[in-house]
Each structure stands twice: as C-alpha cells, then as structure tokens.
Length: 432
Figure 1 (cartoon, rainbow, N blue to C red):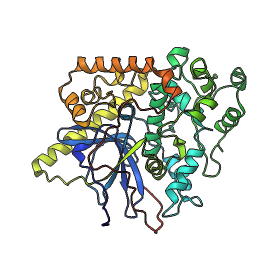
Figure 2 (figure 1 turned 180 degrees about the horizontal axis):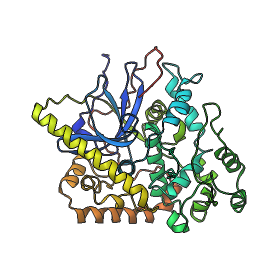
Figure 3 (figure 1 turned 60 degrees about the vertical axis):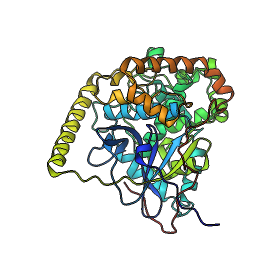
Figure 4 (figure 1 turned 90 degrees about the vertical axis):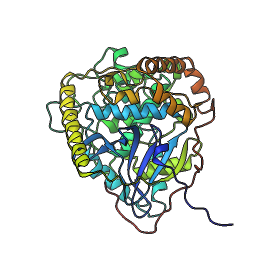
C-alpha cells in the first residue's frame, strides 16, 4: 500500500477559533495563535506576541518557511467564544509575560524528558495535564472576572500577563466554565476582584476547604508554586482581602469543585502556566474526538505593488497607534463585568461586526457558517447571541451529567485526518 502524505487545509477554509501552530524545522511547534477573521482580503490571528508589541495582538497571517499545523475544536460555539475572548484581550492590552516565558516556560521545555526531540511533547503534555486539577481554582477565579485574567497594578512597572500557549489555554477553559454557568461573576458577588493570592486564611476557612485547595492556596501565596521550573512574581494588590475562588464557584449547581473537575471532560485540561505549544498540540493530537487535526497549511506569499504596500504599512501603523492609545485609556476606566460572551465591550470597534456573529451551533456546516457571516446584520447577530445564551442556560445541568455526548456531528473539512506532524531526532530549545 502506498504511503499517504500529510493532509492539507487551505487558508480560505479556516474558521474563527481554529488553532494555528507555528512549526520549526524539526517538526515541533514553537508558537501558537487562534484564527480570528478574514477582512480586507487578509487573514487575521490573535496571539500573545513578545517583540515588538509585548502584548496580546491581532496580526495578519503571513507566509512562513515551514507549513503551519491547524487544529479545530469539535465544539464550534466554544471555539468562537474563545476567539472573541482572545480578541477582547487584544483590545484591552493584556501584556506579554517575559518573566513567565523566559523563566517558567524555558525551564519547563528543557526539563528532563521534556526536551526529548521525539517524545518531549507527550512528556510536556502529561506534566501540564497532571497539574490541571490541582490548579483548577485559578480558572474559577479568572472566569469570575474574564475581561482581564490578571489584575494590573497601576502603581507598579510590572504587570502580570501571558505567553502564547497560556493565552489559548486560558481562553478555552475560561469560556468552557462560563458556557456552563459554573461561577458567580464579580458583579454577582458585588466585589472588585476574586483572587486566591490575596484572600485571608479566615476567608478561606469559611468554605471548609479541601486538602487539594489548601495545597493550592499555599502555593499561590508563595513564589515557589512551580519550584521545579522557576518562580512566579506577582503584583496583585494585598490591601484588603478579596474573596477566594471558592466564593465564586456555584456549589449549589455543581457541588464540590474537586468532584466536578475530576469528572467533567474539558476540551483543553492543561495547566495554562506550563502549557507549552508542544504540550497543547500533543493533547489535541491525542484527543481526536475533541480536536480535529486539519493538517498542514501553507499561506501563499502576496506580492503587493509598492504604492499599495506602503499604504498598507501606514494603515497598520495607524491601527497600532490607535489601539495602544485606546488601551491606555481603557486601563484608567476598565470596569470588571461579565457579559454573556465577552463581546459587549467591543461593539465600538470596526472589526467586531465580523466577530459578533460567531456564536453558532455545531450543527451548521462550514458553508452555512460562511453564509451567516456574510449575510447577518447587527440585529440578527445580537439575537443569535441571546438565543445561544438561553440555550446554554437551559441545558447547563445536562452538560454536567453527560459532558461530551454530542448533539450533532462535528464540523468536517474534506480530507481532514488525525495525522500527527513528523518529529525529528534533533534537539532544539524552542523560542518565539
């Protein structure tokens, strides 16, 4: 039987929420982004970028030396929400964390077994998955104030932030928790913030915490939570105790957090702080019922006339200047609130019209989705969001009872398969 080559996907077949891995010459992912939208004949992605932006940023999808590797979540509604969450962080300037990337991440991928050129991704995935349940409380707290996962201290030059794969993992897990209405928002609790790092021991004891939570709480309040990989600096304010994550959890609906997280099947159950791009791709490859491997993607080079190229560069420069100016303004007036899908604060942006119609059900085919995006107006999009919200609320209990019993077939792209990328026998420290 003749050997079959890798599957391929054309960029025109991308859908919002698709996960795009940037590959190196050894067949290993060194960066990851989420597909956002197609606008002005250009594909855009949202991702955490170091230089030159040092923040979450939306950039165009460019031609690269090595093909991208693309995965698609089988729950399109979840993927579209995660895409919008990433775009929200772009608009509000979630910082890129050099401290996490250069310390925790660098040591994590170089740890014994993690740097193996063939099996390193699997080892990284096993470590990140093994710490998911123990650190799940972090996701609970962030889901209660999803607009900004980290509290930015205006009085300090240091701000907490994310690196690429951390942002993608956070976006999916926060949206999955919101999707089943498992937390109270800061608005529901009438508080400014929820954090295990600044909650008093007396506040914690009110909830009769489990041994797992006590261990997490001790780690969250020290600089040695990931002692084997490095130290995490924190600038969260400590003047006045904020409620802990236990206060935000819907015990009345889902019972003990520990029982829930051990039984519910999340799409991306990895500890975001150490969820490297390779660990994320390894998980997706190992779980084809949750993630479709769409194969390799080559983005063709576009040759623009010089005069058009210069005008495009100037337009992009003006966009970035305006974006960063708006971010500074938002920092001074940012309100902690939760909307149904995180889209409300974005309605004044020119790109939102392409994003706000994405909360669609899995029963729609790719062609149906593109038709809706092309034809829906603002009023139709708003009603669709409200319809999805009502649907989520009505089936939240059923979701917990049968976490992944599909209600319809996943979206399929002709020719897609679960083929995994080729690994190399050479070792290389991943950098982006």
